Length: 233
Image (cartoon, rainbow, N blue to C red; front, side):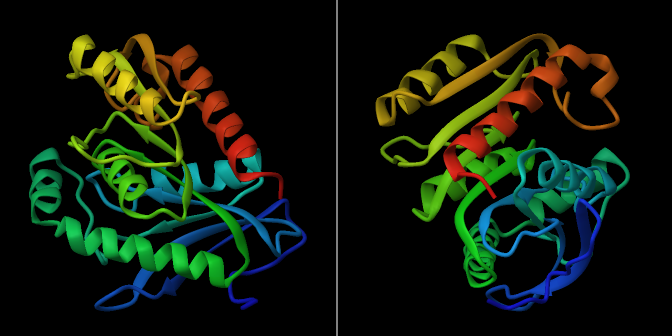
């Protein structure tokens, strides 16, 4: 196993490094639990803002609470937005097939450094990409898309999937009913969790105070999903 992801006596060590992409290497943030040399891993997919401090904090928290090696690749290759208009432009300019290919490369890298089972989580734009990754890559064992969606008509995934949405988001209840019925037809344990009164982005640190109980419940479910589906560290 390659040992280029850092190891310290701290409960979780973090660092930035370069991981292989398809066309070019990607910058990435990795959070590694102490003693992790082989075990579960999760790819953390950014919101439309880019690889922000919020995403790196979520990766660190996943490593701490779920005992996984958490990797957050920079799908924008160094670009980051601070205003919605700029973020929208970056999201629209993102080559989704290329991004999925980069995520497949990230999964391969995780396996190369010792990952035995790989999950994926994403937020907003990244939530939609997390859906796509679960449909695209059979090596992904578990997925937790958060307030994002994609069109999966005629497609399926064998991954265990639990998705998370606030009721004050833009998704109609009837649409989420259909999503839940569909993914449960793939696997009985799959679920769409809905959080009454929670807004879009309720797990983002900038909004977490708007629905703290929903954020805490969603996080406990995410940690349980990855612990159960990916196995212990």
